[in-house]
Image (tube, rainbow, N blue to C red; front, side, top):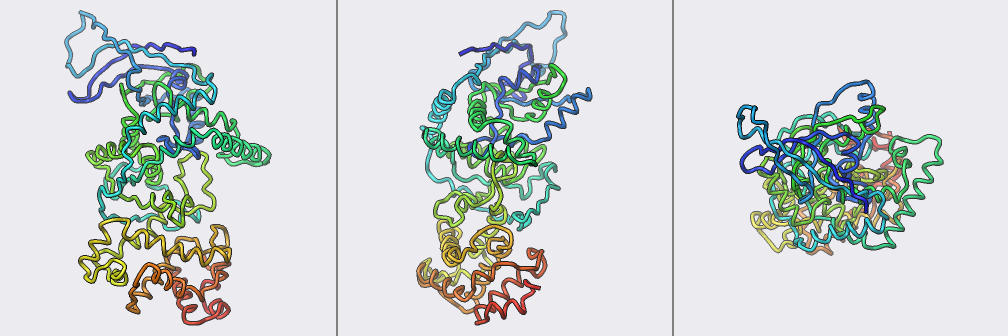
Length: 528
């Protein structure tokens, strides 16, 4: 395999006496593109920690074409053992300077032409790299790290296309800015990559999708980006990033914008972390993006849950806590989307920065977490609804029942599963358990109203669920008179605010009281 040797003159320094060595030198965008990987999270490789390259880099190309300059440094992290750093003598005529000012060094390393490798070769090498991390991994569950309450305040109806990017570029505040760290899915990618049939099936399926999109006369920007290359090359680029000598931690848009501009040899100051393993790379990415210019909690949730092994998650979690980026242990997302027991398994939308992912007809991540937290709060100090579950919990006192409820997600989350699995079993055969226009059952506002109405009604009637089977039987009994056709063709909009949730709950109540669909449609504001 052909290797190219890169050499730079620069400075090496420590930010403090205990820090890892940092290096600064100058390199062109073309060089950085050659040896710097960008491990973007995408529809197949969840383990990347970079966001997808957005069209913003094209504006940066125009910026450089206009002969403007960008003085900001590109932050990269070199793999352990890659860099050869040799100290250089300082000219004798130079005055003595502070020892923290650094020392002159000669920096050298080699980089292979990985794009010349076959897909099979890249797969083998990435598998070897991942195996060494997974072999030493701790597969134990990490869910019980902490359990602080901090409700989401995001829009409940993100799945209706309502988004709020007003805070995307706000400085890190440290308040209500938690990151959800669940359980690693890196092993899943490793297993997939080792299954040649599944890899080939993905390539064929993705290529067919690319070929179909190419036929469209009008394409969105994401579709234009998708058809710009083949499925196999998309996978190869992911694998190449995982094998490159260095990772671009911050600055991929500037590098790509400069690389695609009309100007030649655009150079950047490079700030490099020497001997940085994968955990260090992920850590630096989080610190840069969360303390300087915020990215979405959804993306960080997915990135941390899928980029690291469980052992590595424990490592980076402890370090993030030290600098004030909290993990409130919201493993709810893992339970909702990644646990096969969940009736919503893999039905929740990935973060907007994940490349190539189809988010159509998916449920909003933040809305679903809030939906599940409604059940978690049954064990809160102000809730008496927990009395309904005394027999299931084997308790007869509020204090002990609440303690058991909040002690483990495995106490209340299976009840959340039971509720929604039973509802799903009722309405899926009626063809309304779908996320599409004119079908309102799987809107977050509707789902919230459904579970609120049931829990409040049961609590008001002083019901006690004698067992999980009794719990599910009462759910079926409560909704048996609510026809699936009720959840179709509402004309009222904006239900997530104002009296919308009460309209839905009132209609459900009317069905339980024996009203027909025709009667409900006549008097409910949902149809006015």
